[in-house]
Each structure stands twice: as structure tokens, then as C-alpha cells.
Image 1 (spheres, helix red, strand yellow):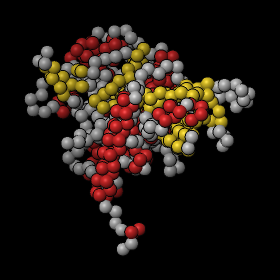
Image 2 (cartoon, helix red, strand yellow):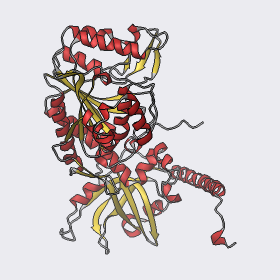
Image 3 (cartoon, helix red, strand yellow):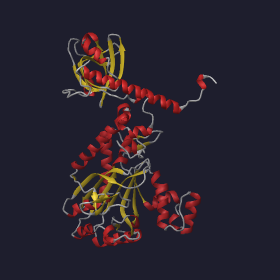
Image 4 (cartoon, one colour):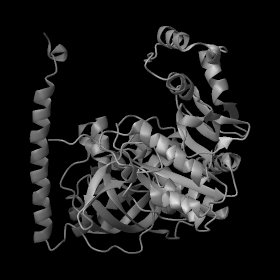
Length: 509
């Protein structure tokens, strides 16, 4: 067998890489010590008056006279070094982009030239010089002085052909941000999206508020909470699963338009679309309803998309383009189920529903389930995941949503919508229930249906919230928007980990 066809021993490659990494670390550590011996702090000092590389590029005037000096002061990380005798070309990169450096022995001086030759890819430096274009037309900085700001002891991933290990990208996000421009762009867009969301809400008269993240009763949604213990109060506590009940207390108190951009915590699975710690925005508008929220979210998403992404046509690859142009589709829960399960679905007997769902649709349902649960399995597995273009699903069964007001024409349905885009729920919204007697009744029914042995009503039902409702809450519309999922949508990302700087990972032991 020839050398070119010999099998690759990945374990041996890994050992060799680790040995090389250890040698490089030792070499760089020695370089740091050498800098100290020269009276240079390898971990730098304050470096004022520098500008973003993107701003340097933007201000350059190629029509300026040759004798006009266009000064530039930048700071960033070295990502490439090319030594060519008495000249060195290097690339420096900051959060806004990259620019080439030209370090000439004659222009920077022998001492600084020799010092630069000690630099490694990954080191952080500050550079002063002037802008010019090379013979090949590349905008560059001719260095007149530079400072060591931080000696990097470990090489960047390019040493081993880039950061290709997906798990390493998530565990060592700092490396991902250094070497992957596309990843850094997504997080810059995330920051801009959240900034524009706040601006949009404030421009429409909503006040941003803060409510407790540590709660005595986990309420406002159906989810498994993270539990902790408050030693000073000698009491169990929960990380919040939703801020809803506290925000409604503010409606009672007279705050008419409120929102909270918040972190919620649900002790559930991790997947491409779920992280146990996630960002939501909840919105409540007194004297509004479900339709108010529909108009609000449609305007919010389209406005933010245009301001940050610059288009309403969001490319998700493989020919899939999400069209956010208004108006968005509206369809009732019953009609969308009929589309997928058959026009006669709601006239079928329970036995016929189970037979069709298991044999035709390959769903995991059984006779022990209620008819509502069987139908909702069809909805979740066959309807929600196929709402690729923006779709408002309205008029859901009342049993599914105990905090929503029933429809005027049918008390078995609630006046809500679920906004689905790209096969996932982006925002549910309600015409909020403000009848304290009915709310108490629904809470008790929910408690009886879900209680486990030893559960007490006072530990599961938020009596203080019910007392607040009894003081009077105005009719209102309320909505929750999954911010992480919205960012996935707008940035064309398909996994929630790609839009979270530090997603939850398995703990290494």
C-alpha cells in the first residue's frame, strides 16, 4: 500500500497535534518572558484614540494628493504575517473588519522592525501610521509605530485548518468569533435586532419594565421549572418560566403598555430549537386584544427586518426564502387541521381519528388520549412544522390556554393566535382573561388535572395574582415573542446554538 493510500490514524494525528501545541505554547511563553526582559509588558497598557478599521477604510480618500498624510490608528489581532526581507506585510483584524499593515524597516526603524518580527499570529497590537494603497490596489496602513497590547500564548485554529469542529465552536465561542466572520456577523445582527426591537416598542409608547426572575410559584406557562432554595427565607424557589403574571399585575396597577425583554428558564430538553435558558419579550397593552397584538408583531418584525437585514426576503438556503411582506396568512386552528388531516377530521369518531393518525400519518397516538390531545398531536406534528411562510393560527381550543379569553361566538375556543414562521412558533398572543372568577376556576381545573401526590394548591396556584385580578385588570392584549427564534429567522440560522453566544452544552467530566 502506497503512502498516499495508507489509512489515517486520527488518534495519532491528535497526539501529534497536541505535542505541537505544547511546543508552540512553550515557545510563545518564552517570547513573553523575552519581552519582559526587554522592558516591554507583553500584556499591554491603555491605547487611546484608535478607530475602527471599517471607519479607516471609509474615511480614505483615494483622490487625495500624494503629499497629504491620511493618518490611521488601529488596534486589533494579527491574523497573518508575511516577512519579505526588510519588509513585513501583516493583517490586523478588529470587530469591524481587516486591514493590511506594511512594516518597512526604513520607515518604522530597526528596533521596532526587529520587535515586530517577534510577533505571532493571534497577538494583539496597536498601530499608528498612514493610509496608502499598494501596487496591487489594496488599502493598507504604513506603520510608523506599534505597541504590543497582548501576547497570545496559544495559536489560532487556522493552524489546524480552521475551526471546523462544531462543538468546539460552541464551547469556545471566542475562537469562533475570531476566525469565523459569518458567525461574528450573526451576533452583531443579534445586537442590532434587539436594539431595534427596544426602539420600536418605545416609539409606540410601551415602557420597558423588569420583573422577578426568582419566584415562589412558577407560573405564567406550562413548563418544568428549575428549582432552587432560598436559605434566608427557608423556602423553595423557582427560576421563572415566564414573567406573565407579574406583568399583568402592572396592568392592574395602571401601567397600560408594558414590555419586558427577559431571560426565561425551562428545565427541559436541548435541541436545534430549544435551549433551557432563552430570551423572550412579553408585551401587554391595556384596552387592546389579540388583533392589536397581531398588528403589533407584524409591524415589529417587518420594521426590524428592513432596518437590520435590509430586506423582507430572508434566505435560509437550499432555495428556501421566507417572505415577510404583509399581510400575513390568517387561518383558524380547525381549518389548518382540516387542511392536513382531512376535511372530515372533526366528524370522525375517536377510533377513526386514532386509526388515521397512526396508519396514515404515523403519529404516536392511542385510545387512552383525549380527542383534543389526538387532534393537537396532528396540529403540532403536521401543521406547525409546515408553516414556513408567516401564518397566524387563530381560535384555538380553550382547554389548551387557561389564561386567554374565550371567543364571543364560541366558548369552546379562545381568542388567541400562534404565529408560525419557518416551521416554528415565533409568537403566541391572547386577548387576556381578566375575569377573576373564571381565572380562579381555570387555575383550579388545571391544578386538578396535573397535580401529583403531595401537591398543595397554595404551592401551585398564585393566589396573590388572583387577588390582583379581583382589584380589576383592564381588558388587554398580551403576547410573547421568542427572541432567539426571531433572530434565527432574520439571520437565516437553522439552529438556536448559532444565535446564542454561549449555548448550554453537555458538562465535560
